[in-house]
Amino acid sequence: MSRVGGQLAAVRPQSRDLLHVFFVDDSGVLRCLVEEPFSGAVANWRPVQLPQADGLPFSTDYHPAGAVATGHQMRGERFDVFTVDRDGMLRLYYADGRSGWRSDVVPDALGIPPGSGLVTGYLDGGGKLAVFSAGRAGELLCFTGTDDERWRKLQLPLGGTLPHGANLATGYLATGYLAERGRLAVFAVDRDGAFQVLVEETGGMWNPLSPAEARLPAGAPLATGYRRRGVDPSVFVVDDDGDLREFRFDGQTWRSQVLPGGGLTSPASVATGYQDDQQLLVFVVDEVGRLRQYACRPDGSWTVGIVPNGNGLPAGTPLATGYRENGTVLDVFALPRQPAGAPIHYSGYGGGWTGPHSF
Image 1 (spheres, rainbow, N blue to C red):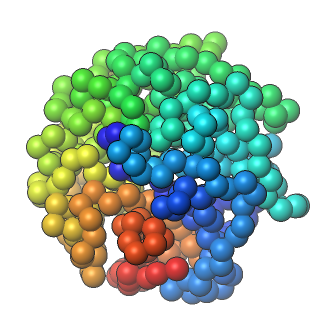
Image 2 (image 1 turned 45 degrees about the vertical axis):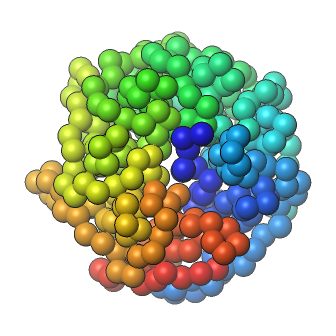
């Protein structure tokens, strides 16, 4: 029940130049909005109808709203969107640029708790798509797909047990045998509030790394980002004290530091993005409903500010980031669940922000 992130995804499919936004609305329907071409700094959007898009979890007293994750197969030619429906099946929506959207279910991906978090990553140096989720017993599940559309289910050796509705995140360690993309790492907060890290090794093996000590909400939302190219990822999460915490890998273990500001609600959704394709930014909605922006300076220190007009949002609002206009416009999407469950967005362009914009 801890998840307040994951119901919203924004991505530019590799075979297309237009930003796609996916979210689960208040009636449990997967929605898709696509930017209109040449729409400029303030985008125009059109809805896209997805097949068999209903029957997904919406937020109740028994489970959180459904999660959305995206990925690519067939060497980037096919774009996939994943959700878990109310019957516990992992649904797949896909498009290849040559025909319309189609839907299917992932074989053997049954019995996943409705409302489970989802995240994707790439194994074998980027050659194999993997979808991660928490199972009914709190185990970490991995479903791997290949270009021949065969799927394999694995249970991975995470160092702790995950709570129902746990969020997950992925990133790539810069060191190791997988030089092109790096070793895939999966991040989570277990039911005891411990930060857990699981790293891909050779031969399909996985290595749990020693978690750093911190007081974190069980299953808390996480986000990964990179201070600069070619370095290990940072992982961001709001801790039990209402501080934004950054975990960094020092080559042996993960250590954490508290970023300035305080005054956050936990759990809270966290999103990362980049200004001018270089400066790492972190976004979160604070306890009084303001959309905060944390910016990493060249010397590694952090500044914190408020996105203009980023007020009046529910604390911890689900967030996602995406890029338009060939990557020159950074959008921050928020899903405040009012009045009809549609997202809003803020656009970073030319060194400033506009918004909020509705769809």
